[in-house]
Image 1 (cartoon, helix red, strand yellow):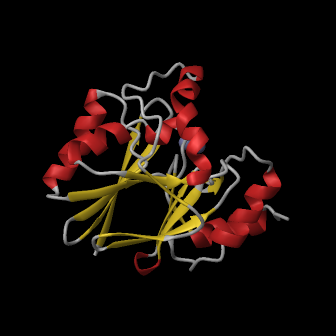
Image 2 (cartoon, helix red, strand yellow):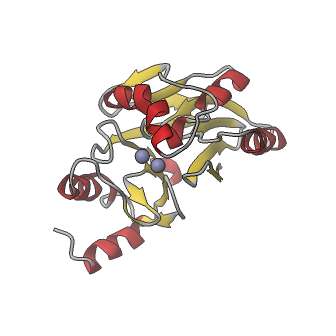
Length: 212
Ligand SMILES: [Zn+2]
Ligand SMILES: [Zn+2]
């Protein structure tokens, strides 16, 4: 019924996703494509699968997750969504990329739409429940599809373990405990970098490491 395609893009090995419904409705999550071949890989997939991209949704405003948003928005005539608390991250993205010796081929200082709190975003057949998980950045969110048992966790989770916090370890543990580990155990978690895993694996990790 739902399909997830993961692409690994740009120098930061960032995960970009195409989430699609069997009727062809699709959302592009964190498009990080930053050169011609990466852009072609993404658009070829969308064409091959006969998908209709309806929107871009960003888990947060860091440059490695948004570098391809301008291209995707222009190619498909769609808009992007991000949490309002990451507005400043979006503005600073191109400068932040330079620190990593990366040039954003398409500058993308602003998202088109900002949401607050934890709305349900509806794009065609896709209903995305936003979970606000501030820690990696103030506007970091996880995107949850309860009926598909899917979670896109951004950089709150990293390669099936704890993600990175810019706000202290305690806040990261808190959002993971309160918002992520409470989800059904078989929910598949796609993080911003690295491989996917299930909630039950994250729970096991949390118990082994005796997280506070
Ligand atoms: Zn990040
Ligand atoms: Zn990242």
